[in-house]
Image (tube, one colour):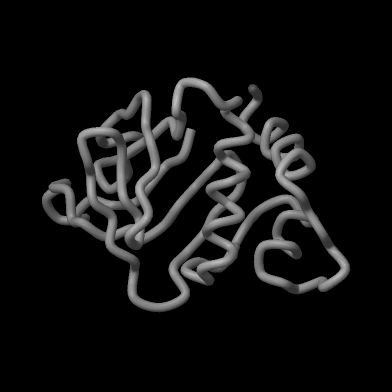
Length: 131
């Protein structure tokens, strides 16, 4: 499940920005101003791109974080997460502060020879999320 730091730290109310993302031991922080994060009828929109959600929980861990299961109901969960991570990487919205070495180096382009495709990244993420 994807955890999103999107609530005001003083009140716990939804704030409309993504101040951090967490997926298993992978943690991402915004590179600049936290991008817009909007809840929709079908899921959420992050920086203008809509992602379908089949389950969510407010105040997961503490009241700053909400938890979301990105899914369209048809695609394998780890594949949906891999697509999400590829999109995030391409937008350069976040930097990886914690994660498995291969992912950390790939996400922030620290090792140019590190290449992932969706199935390879989905396999790595499946280990992180225990699907």
